[in-house]
Length: 142
Image 1: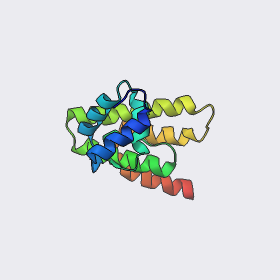
Image 2: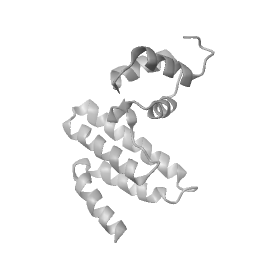
Image 3: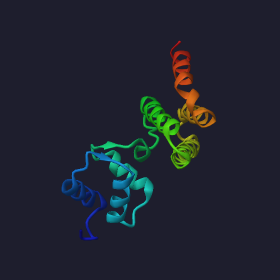
C-alpha cells in the first residue's frame, strides 16, 4: 500500500482485502505493521470506527458513555478471570491507561469522576465489579 495514503484509507483497504470477522490480537499485529508507524491509541480509534467486532483487549475501555464503560469493563473482567498472567496484565494495563486518561480529562469534563470510580473499583477487584456495578447503578438511579 502506498505510504502517502491516509491511515484510515489504508486500513479500510486492508480490511476489504482480508475480511476478518473479528479483530483479535493477531490481526492487530498485522494491521499495526501494515500501517506503521501508528500509535496504539490512533489504531484503536480507527478500529473502533470500522464497524467490525473487536476482541475486548483490542476494543479497550470505552469512555464515551457510562453504558459503553460498563460494557467494556465487564468484557475485560471476563477476559481477566479466564486469562493467564499475560492476559490479566494486559487487562489491567488497559484499565489503568483509561483511568489515567479520564483523570487528565477531569478538569474539562467533571462527569469523568464517576468513570474514574468505576475503573478504580474494577482495578481493586475485577471479579467483584459485576455485582458492584449493579449496586452502583441502583444508587445512581434512586
